[in-house]
Image (cartoon, rainbow, N blue to C red; front, side, top):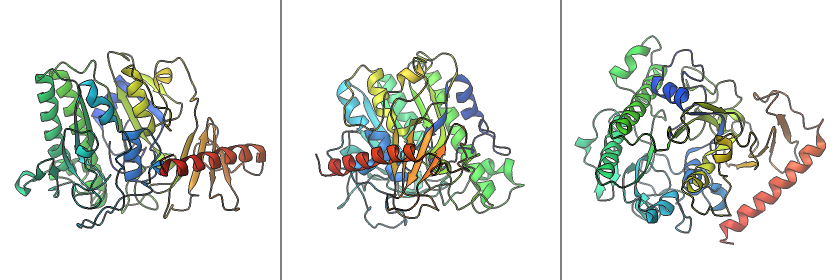
Length: 413
C-alpha cells in the first residue's frame, strides 16, 4: 500500500508525466480495479480496515494517528479485541510480518498496539511518517533499528526487509503473509538523485514526489521479480492500493498529487479523497487480465482472502468477499459502502453512503444532503438531491442504521 498516492498518480491511469512501468505491468497482467475505495480519507483508519475487514468507526480509530514526528503517544491504538488478518492466518501455518508504516498504535508505552500484538511474528516498521530518504525511527520486535542501517531510499530499505522475510519463508516451505506499507509519497516527500533524474524539469516538490513514486514502483517490480525467482508467484496473491487520495487543497507545485478526474483530495469524502489506484495479481487463479468496474474497498481484503482459503468469514464485517466479482459471476457489488470521518474534510460532508450508482453525502445535521449518480457523473458535478428525495431518504435511513451499529460495536456489543 502506498501512502497518499492519488488515483491519477500512475501512468496506467493516464498521468502525463509520471512513469510507473511495474504498476502498469501489474495492471496489464492482472486485475485492475477502476472503482476501488480506501476505507477512509486518511491514513490510520484505512490501515485498520485492511487488517480487520471492518470500518474503523466500529473500534474507535476515527482519524490519522499522532503525526508530529515526536515521541508523543499515538491518539489511537488498534484494540486487542479486533481480530486481524494476521491472527486469522497464523493458526493456518502462515509466517506473518509487517513492513513500513504501521500507524495503528505505538511499539511501547500507554498506546502500545504493535504488529506483534496483533498476530504478526515480526515487523520492520515505523509508528508514523518518516522521510522517504534516510528515514529514522524504524523498529523491529527486538527494538529500534540502528540509524546506520537506515541510510538511503526508504522504499528500498523496507523492501530489503520484506524480501528477506519472503525468502526465509519460502526456504522453510512455509506460506507467508507480508504486509508492506510504503511511506511514499507522503510528506515530507524526498527522493534520491537517481529517482529524481527523469523529473528535474519539474523542480522542487514535484520532482521529489514523482521520484518517490518511481522508487516505490521500482520496489514493486523487485517484489514481483522476487516472487518469480522463488517460483511462488503463481499462487501468491499480490494486492496493491493507496491509503487515501493525494495531499493538498488542490493540485499545484506545492501539492503535485493527482486525483485524476475526481473531485476532492485527502481528508475529503468526495471521490478524489477515497477512490484510489488498486491492483491484484494472482496468476494461478486469474491468468488473464480483467478490469473490475464495480465498487470494491480495502475492507474487502479480509473476507476475500478468507474465502479464497475456504475459511469461515465473520458476520460482523463491513467488507465483502470479492471472489464472485473477480470471477465474473457477478457484475455489481451486492453490499453498500459506508464512510465517516472527523476533522477538516476540505469541504465535503463527514458521512457518505455508496450503493450501486448512488452516493449520498451528509452531515446528518439538518443541512442539505448531496446526492450523485456515480455512473453518469463520477466527478460529482451535479447534485441530484432535490430531484431524487426518495432515494436520499432511503440512503439516509440506511446510513443512520449503520452508524448506530458502529456505536454498538465500539461498546463491544
